Image (tube, rainbow, N blue to C red; front, side, top):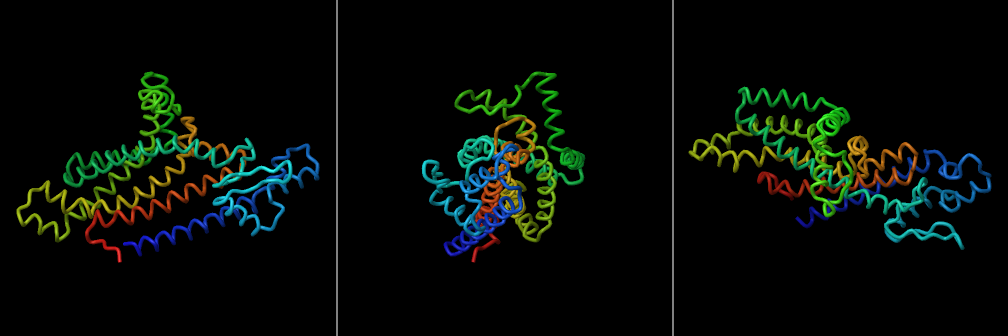
Length: 329
């Protein structure tokens, strides 16, 4: 196990390094000159050169990339003399629009995105897996056909359409819920729950529909396996047979997809956060893309890549607990 984990961690570091390299190359070599963006329309060539020197983008590419990696671990200095500014580790630079430290911006928005992701994940797992399991057990019945038809329709609805519809019905017409806002749980638990309920439902709907169909297919395939027929022939109770022998192998693919989906959402639910105006990482990314704020865009890209890679490693480690046929060698 230790050897396997060490190998996966080494692969994680390599993947993150490659993501950093290609992301840095795209945003700082192929994008518009950030010095011109910061300086504005009425700017002199001398001022542009000064901004380039402060940002360090007048250096060769490998020097810039080395300074960026070093800033992640040891911090980084911008400018010189009286204009020297130290960016503490982990340094992701400063926003071109607000001049704030990008790391501080990301950390201040991450709790909102994490709240949205965790709440939605709980909903779609409970609804999707339960519906798919009941559909498999009652295969061919009206319940099975109803669940599959509803899941097909639910998966076809775009997030922004469902979000706008819920806002119109629950906020404008019925006035059951307030318009979502990033309220801390400790400040007002009821307001916190009411504010996040619609984003949770919007995100969970599409995922729950997909998970229901996938769970149903996996459980049906597992019920047809030889070891299931053997378990039933021993006279084991149906519920025990389902819980002990069918669910674990059937849920292994669900675990894989869930790990990747949840990790990606931790990097920000761009559409949902933007529609509901929640100040999470996703909305910050959308605003930065509109303003071409390269350091913020790159930071969000690296954050999402980090969560996906780490989530993939965690999922692999969970496999052995779900399916005894899986062994790490």
